[in-house]
Length: 116
Length: 114
Picture: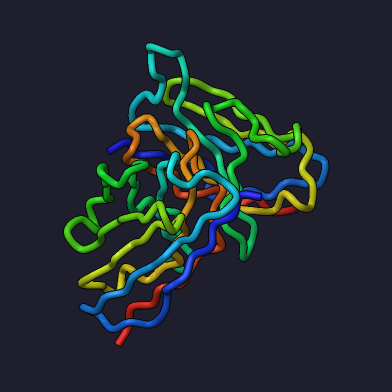
């Protein structure tokens, strides 16, 4: 069974940093693009970042460029999202997903709260 | 960026009746070389992550009931639930991947039981 499990969320102060992790299993992780999508409380879905198979191509939504970094470790079947200079508006559930034409499947998500 | 606009924002449908959700893109998501529309639909039930329902605008994901169907081309798309069931209460999102790897989602449409 294909499975994705996110971790690393929590409460952080504005300006702080957090690193999210997403562990994949049940598929050949190194052959797929991966994505992070977030959902602010009570709001819709917002694409955050995509990463190709070997980690050489990274793409971000404009609102996180220069602050967030997506990366992966294929030996550990994991993708990461390093989030720096966090703002209140980054508060959201962060989902990782495998890209196979579209996003499928999705992890359960991890909540990031940016507040003083 | 390609802007995706869904309508309506919410709708209430009686059990067994048809539900129709529209999605309009600010530019065509039809790739002329392969004649495919780079459009997906997702379902998100309360407290759950999104789940892929439809891709290439009309291809149903494995395991998705056939009461769900997608149609449209170019800039105008529709997700239809032919006979609404109680378990279909959810928020539905369209998403373009024409501009891959930069994606955009519609704002979502909430489907409830009347």
